[in-house]
Length: 408
Image 1: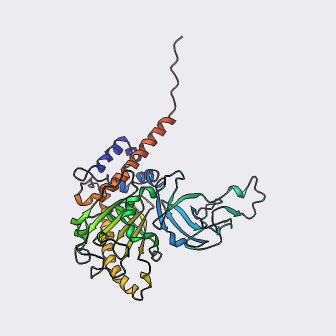
Image 2 (image 1 turned 90 degrees about the vertical axis):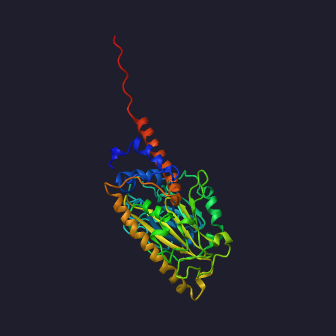
Image 3 (image 1 turned 45 degrees about the vertical axis):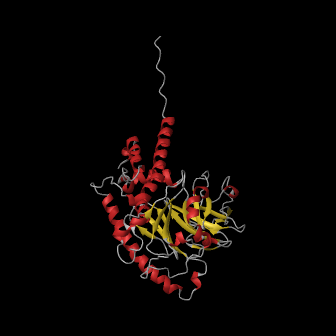
């Protein structure tokens, strides 16, 4: 797709992706491969939506910070001396050097290039040898700040300072996850993110796809959570996410060779919770795979039309990690989960290859792909609304023709 194909007909045609599974079509392949569409998508989605960047537990005490990137924007999340959680750009306001990398604890952020120094709140506190620069006022300079919200222990940022709060639009998901008490769940910091050569939506769709579970993953490591027991609750109007429940063949099912929970079960779970797996999705960044003894969280961070990075983390019931046998039990879980994830990653790469083909079409859905319809219904109005607003803006800025002269 080139820029001239971004037109009214293309965006009007996306409406079929929001229909029921009986008639809906998948999004056009160009939405997954075209660089011009990705640039449009930054404005339609990423510039105004809440983006998960990590866990609040990574910044517990004053001076703690971590860094990340999304859509090419370097981000710092830090805890100030006033116990405020802040998120801001890592780009020095002098010559664009990044002022922080990795994570740790610090008194402030010193640009390694020219030693401009910023406080934990992002305000410039020192800029050496600038006294002869006309009109320079360090009080007017700071690292650009982002909006921040914490939901169930996950840190979200928003580049749009006027964005509506996230939490009120996630009440249904929060209720479904209440028994896991995710705000107090414990887990290690994830390993460095994997860089994956396919579009972020391919990853996000795979994370919430019930249809492939009994097919791609068939065998003793997954058969206890069959596709036929997928349930897709209708999200409330205006919801910021959606759910998939998948019944299991026995209580406390978990991904390991025994098919049963090896780690402590989250103590507040109901009988309903213990007889299903829950898949919660807060696009465009966070997917949760929830079992009785372990939560896998996936933070999907787009960085190009056909690439993204993904942080993969784990959460457990409080105290679970204190068990002397914890690492051995976890290893059994991760051996199974790793095998399943490897299958997913393999097919995701092949899907991206297929989407580049001239023979890729807008496909049709099974009833077991209800989460894909929910994703489309979240995503497509953002595409269409942004396109309409952009066209209105172009029209408003169009030059007005001079009035015709009336003959004398």
